[in-house]
Image (cartoon, rainbow, N blue to C red; front, side, top):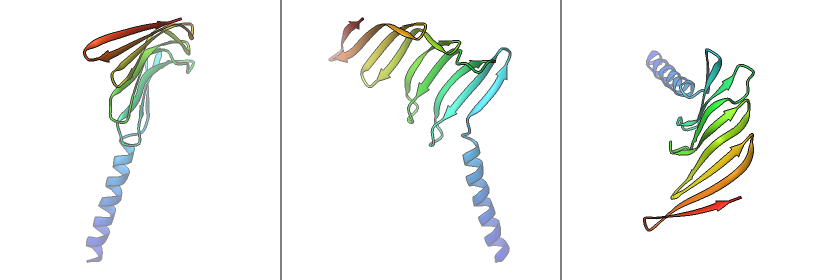
Length: 122
């Protein structure tokens, strides 16, 4: 009976340890970049992206909420946001144009009764 109890306790412990280890952040060096993947506590992917070999954000980055829905996506160049970034929120899409980490333009797209409303900010 003691062996059975010990076996069950050990298998439960190993299951918990294994479940936790599946969701550790990962970093893989591939050529001239480091591919990164970060996880939420519930195990869903929180962010994916790449660093250059000097550990600066570099390349495409995507973030997700804890339900796995995309929240934002855009490019970094040597640690600075560049180009067009997309931010998703329910029925809204916000497009932000970056010029060396400075906001150049913001566009709001909203779905209202199947009509797209666009607003530009400067």
